[in-house]
Structures are given as C-alpha cells and as structure tokens.
Image (cartoon, rainbow, N blue to C red; front, side, top):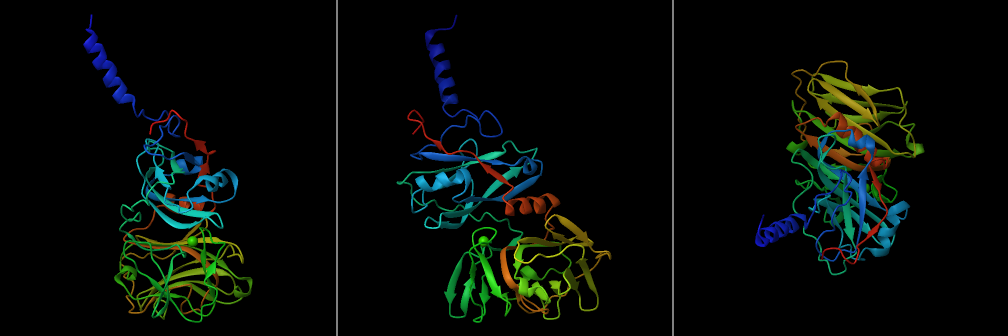
Length: 378
Ligand SMILES: [Ca+2]
C-alpha cells in the first residue's frame, strides 16, 4: 500500500501535468485558454482541401470583416488592435504580420506563419485571441517571410519621400518601390487582401536594380494578383519586367494571351498561355517560376510550361529597375496586389495551390466566437 504522502505527490504531479492539458484533437478541440486577460477567441480551421497539401512555414492570411462569424470580432477587439494574438492549439504564440487594421471600415488582414500544414502536421487549426484592453502592443518576433522571399508587397503600406511615394516591402530585405508622379488613385480598396495598388496605365512601380532580381541560372518564383480594367485589355501591357528589352518580361498581349519571356541577350526562352483569358474587372492569380530546366506559368490553377529546355541557361543581368505593373510592352491599367518575388527556389505545386485558395477565401473556416468562462485560467 502506498503512503498518503506518495499519493499526494502523485496527485500533485498529475495536477501539474494537467494544468495545461493537450488539445484533444487536430482541430484544437478542448484546447485550454491562454494565460492573461483575453476574453474572446475564434478558432480558425483549415479547409479539408488545404489540409491535404504539404506546406512548411506558410503565411496564412486571416481576414476579419463584417461577414459571417468574423463580424463578432469587431464588437470585442480593442480599438487599438493591440490585443490581437495568434496561437496554436496549445496556446503557443504564432508569428504574424498585420497588413491592415481599420476598425472604422471593419477590415483586418494579418499573415500568420504556420510551421507546418498537411498530413504530417499535428494540427489543422489555430486561434485568434482578442478582448483584453490592457494588453500591450505585441512585439514582432522577426520577419514571417523566409530568406528566399526577396519582395513582399501587400500594397497597403506607403510612405512619402523626397522621390515621391514609396511602396513598402514586408520582406526582410525592405526593397521599397517608387511610384512616378503621374500615378493617380493609388489605392483600390477592394484588393484580394485589404487594399491593392491601382495603376492608370501611365507607368509602373519601380525598384532599383538589385541582386535579388538578377536570377542568372537560379530557380525563382514570382507571384501576384492582377485585375485589369476593361479598357486596358485591347492593348499590350507588361505586368512585371526587368530590363528595357525584356530580359524577363511577363506581359499580356492585346489579343489576350499571357507570355513570360526570359532572355540572355542571345537566346530567349518563353512560356505562353493562350487557352484562357485574363478577365477584366476580376482578380486572377499569376505565378511564374523557373523550376530547373523549365519555365512555368500558372494562371489561377492552370499550369503551363516551356517547351524548350532551360538546361544551362543563364538569364542576363540588366542594370535597370524591376518594374511591377510596367515594362517594354506598356503599363498596367488596373489593380495589382500581393506581389512576391522569391529567389533560389521554385515554390512547390502545393504552395501555389494554397496561395490560390487563400486569395479566394478557401483556406480558413472561422468558427463561432468563444467567450472565456469564469472558471478559465487567468
Ligand atoms: Ca493588399
């Protein structure tokens, strides 16, 4: 028979071990409340299609609007937005970056880095906590974008400078872009994520020449969302380019097909997309990548690849700006959002598909708001 002291020790150990019990399932069922005074939370559950993908350190967009379950958020979040926290099922903080917090228009967009998504992940959900007016502004714990990501333009952060308006880069490299003075109406509030950059066809957004966009023989990936105006579609327009002669140039031909060209001055490799149309007044996701000896062009979920091999191909290195929404075939008239450039790798098929799902709001299902019970841990 065990002594009373031993039993007490067992009870105490058990109690200590159970003070923060593990969640009961992959969807954060039975998850304990985090320490502190947060009074509300919502569980954000990945869609089944997304759970079937395999992703590491993927930035998941969280959007709180006046629609559906997320509307409750606006009744309880502090007007400063300082009290917003993201955690995994066990309450560990997740790294995040806020793109937009606007309590007046009730729009919140944040990018939350999930270490792992897919069958090998341990969880398919996470939490957003809010409703603690005493919470201090959270301190960012480092960039959420990996080192391969050389440019991230949410088109939501601008600053005035002596050279005009700068569009700020959220990557760790801070490659801020410049807008020419003739650009009117900078913001399209109806972006894919928060606001988008609106261009009038006069000129694009320029970034000084940088090794980040001198691809040479490397793999790389360019991703963005675009929404041309109807009046722009009869014309040619460059969507993204580097080099006046089109060393790399992603453009839409006036007869309505997309082409991505890559040149080394002597030889040009290209991939074209001619079977579907880039729609006017609708958002389309474009991804271009070099994957070893192939060029890929994705238009939403349709994938095309170059017919000629890029084996041994070294792209030229022009000493000219990178231009978003402009280039040798004219400038974009319309809106562009969430532009990213990665160097050193072609993003995986699952990454590209997940990015498409995210933009179409097919990534997360917010569950009804939970209110902290009186007996929850403080
Ligand atoms: Ca945006």
